[in-house]
Length: 517
Image (cartoon, rainbow, N blue to C red; front, side):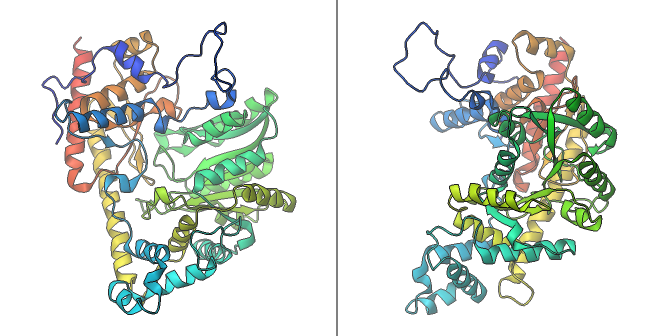
């Protein structure tokens, strides 16, 4: 249970203290006159790494871990009894049940003695026959050794299953030779950006709000992030005029804009692009000679009948476009939710053959993707079918997770919209809401006086008062003068009202405190 203080003020009330908590968790560089005994210091390290920021695991989640440790050591010492991590789309951290079929296949692959002739009769009493057959088949792909390296691009048979999945989804051919399995979609995005960026003058168009992976990776590569703004008043759709403005302004500054990243369904917004909007983007990228990066990891997290998911690959194929496309998918999201297994893939469309060879070289440097992640990708794209022993349970589990997410998304949006000084578009997809908060001017002035982003200070106060960890909108980018935060709707359904009540009490008290001051 949340135990809010009578005032519902944060446990740490001093803005100066909160300022210190929000500061980066690195020591200030030593005065150059002081000789360090270390070769590797903040002064000598790669400056691109030093400038990287990743708000999803920034100062607020770091502070949340400190508070979690405090609760373990000193129960009852804080105005709440647990940390609720809504800062990251990590379903199993918030008690989402793993899919039985996937875990049974994984268990059999890890402990192969269960498949030996002397044990198989006992195993058949514990595991459905289709999980045994799937485990045997998967093991045959890797020489009966799940701990051995696979091909650098991933297991060929699984890549073929991915191709069949894409063909069934889109109605157009897919070639397994253009598919690369990766240790999560993040690694795939990083690899493609790595090969795109050849100088500090290269720019990549990114949506605002955006997932911080893109700005962090571009900072690491010392490249330029070129923002284009999604339209909050239009359910986070994309404006053609703003795409044109963003590109023309960057090129006028001499930036070599080479690519455009699109996240659909949106993170952090929860928006889902219409097919005509996608076609507009494809034509724009083809006309302007931009490589198109389609981040589609939330493609099964769709909660509306009006905006169904349509892949960029499908639209490119329908238009017979020559645009160069990389599309990304992952086991971390959807109903699979296997974030820690690190499995994903990218499909390359209309990419130069010589570049495909260079991508193979990059993959080879990493040896191979996580093997169990690859096997989970196989389950995602090739699940049990009607008539299989595991099909009924698999479908029940998938449907239950989906329906619960859909209910929680709607319930949280309703709660946000019922609060003063707050508005929120409903989630059409993904795992997040991105509500807008009208922060009182007195609070904005207070935040600026201590050198902090107002939304970051608001989120830190929320954490200190309730144990709820979210991400400030400034970590994703937002229209100047507006303030947001991103929250998942992943807390368990049986605790969801408690989660909402904790937030509501904090926010109402916060608004009252500053408007009555």
